[in-house]
Image 1 (cartoon, rainbow, N blue to C red):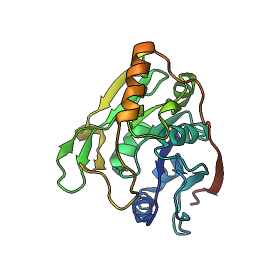
Image 2: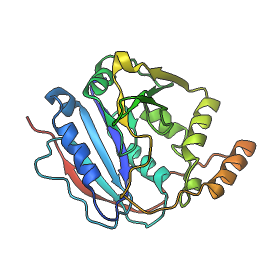
Image 3: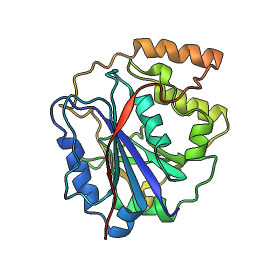
Amino acid sequence: MNTISYITHFFYNESANQLYDLLNTYNQYNKKIKKQIQFIFIDDCSHINIKIPDKINLNIKLLKITDNIQWNQPMARNLGVLQSTTDYFIATDIDCVFQEKLLDNILNNVFCNYYIIYTMERIDINTLMQITPHPNTYCMCKKRFVDLYGVDEDFCGHYGHDDTLFMKWQEHNNSIFKKLNGKEYGYIYGSKGYQKNTHNLKRDDTHNYKILLNKLRNNNYSRKMCRGNWTPLENKTYHE
């Protein structure tokens, strides 16, 4: 692949230092990688204003969802993919950091096609011990994602299980899952626990678990993507 989109989302009510730390890390990667990646950040209606620092030299689209809906990750991901301009994309969480080696390998040494979804191995950013990969982090074809209606937005407004159904829906439609070996391709730095001080939303999955069971039982995946309102905030282009 010559180019790829890197899509993630966030919601902050106090500090966006987590985002700025991520940007500073990627800003130090080699020029070729920075030129090849389109970073798409979705602000999920944060309570503070977010601005990309002038010193950050990356290809960046910053978009903001303007509807104040809790746990709106499915729409955030769908919006990011629909606004991407590359054939393939990486979807991940804001607290994940991809090693430079991993991004370079995804761009230059990984065979991608319409049906393959790649998952990646994670190591704890503090202990460097391997931890379980999260199902909401993967690399895949944009057309495949859109053809199968993205992430089901019926889960928006409550916590959990949208990523579980997404994976099962992809499996049901014959997507092929492959895991990239971390020793060969590189790792994602993550954390065993949730990042603190970014929001105070409750993680109660009772409501969405009922939705998950119903959808698995009746195979009724939502067909409507990006139901809410959003606005573009920034569009930066990498320069030599």
